[in-house]
Image (cartoon, rainbow, N blue to C red; front, side):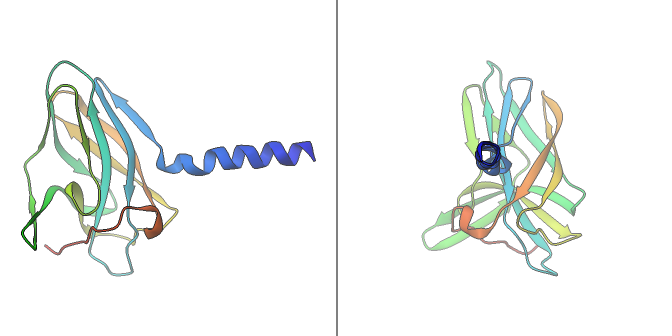
Length: 158
């Protein structure tokens, strides 16, 4: 009976860790990369994460890539009155002591164009982030079900 309790505790502690992945590259801390699931034949998706610059000099997120998509672009979304505006941006500035949190429905996100496969809840995929000073780093993006993510974001077409 004691062994079952230990196994249950380990499973409970690790169950949430799929969404709590942390990465460090030089002075940058990257946390919790995730994407929402897509449906079959959906050509686009989006990925989100948090980047914190814990250093004393600025950096920039310049690009992202993933084998699950033909292209990954940095996008910004904002509301102007009752109109949602989304557009590609060349980079995300990361001044010292700054935290950028990408989330559905507001701010920055990474658009995945030309998906080569559906993004299924519970699965994950690799993504490479390229920073101006910190260089490249690989992260694992976890696909979560809609109930686990903040509501409000919607994919857009190219």
